[in-house]
Image (cartoon, rainbow, N blue to C red; front, side, top):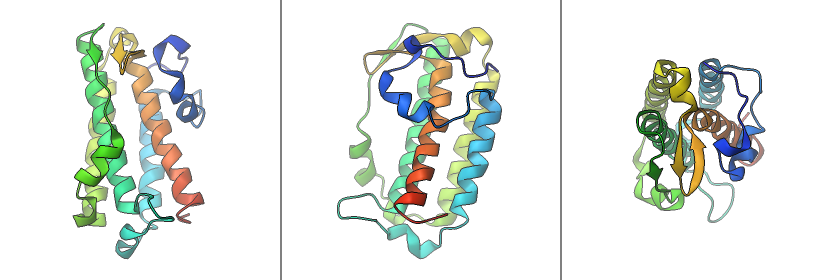
Amino acid sequence: MIAKNLTSDEYNAYYDRYLQKIPGNLELGILLLENKEEFLGLLKKIKPEDLTYSYAEGKWTIAEVIQHLIDVERIFQYRSLTLAREPGIKLPGFDHDAYVPASSAKNRSLKSFKKEFKAVRNAGISLYQSFSKEMLESQGFVSGSSTSCRALGFITAGHTKHHIEIFKEKYHIS
């Protein structure tokens, strides 16, 4: 797979905040694997009773953040697959704030979250490894912005890293 040498026309500038959190020299498959292990290591430090904890009024619980990560991972994989198969397509955005209350994350177990995250991330790693160089570089429009297939993979890892940092800083899990 291609190392991260993304150009500014491959993603919306909003995602710079996630891309800056990941090393620029790793291939996408290795990055996603290492990022997966880092997140699973963090999940080992969470107790089942911690899932309902929120660090402030109106902020997501630990369970809701984990569900959010799984949801975003799936959506970005779908977007990547679509861009790889149908370059130039226009895909809509999604409201992640609407997904959280609809997710019923509060009814999930820590074990189920771990199992699902592993399955979804492993599927994503396989997906990105299946793409040719041309597929990874293929572009379309996501939420009105030009986006490449590979950028979505790197953004996925950066998004997970962003939430790992929030877990450590705000939820005091380290």
